[in-house]
Amino acid sequence: MTCAAIAVHNVEMAKTNSAARSLRIVLTGVTRGLGRALLERFAAAGHVVLGCGRSAQAIAQLQQQFPSPHHFTAVDISDENAVRAWAESLLAAGDPPDLLVQLGHDHRCETHRQFVE
Image 1 (cartoon, rainbow, N blue to C red):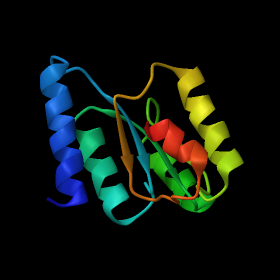
Image 2: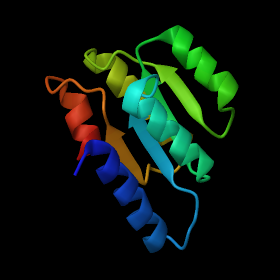
Image 3: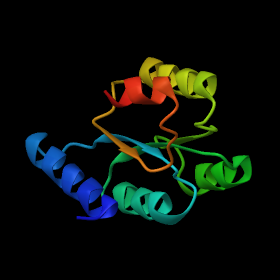
């Protein structure tokens, strides 16, 4: 099963378990490729996407295309302090996420591993 299929399957399972409520989905690597495709699908399904990517310009475009309640932040996830600050801001801003889809990642980043766990 591909990463995309797993992510979509997990969202479908979470929807079934949550009586079709909107899910809060944290999505790394949201600015292009698979992350961008998943963003579009999740947003179209009525879920709230909280995403990050390295390109500030691409993040600004996403913020215009997908306004609140979605939220996007430019984060270089190889920078542990940046990941920690982003994770803490997400948790402080609302309920914990229902799902984390980690596409852009750096296995060296301890904070990112802790956020996943």
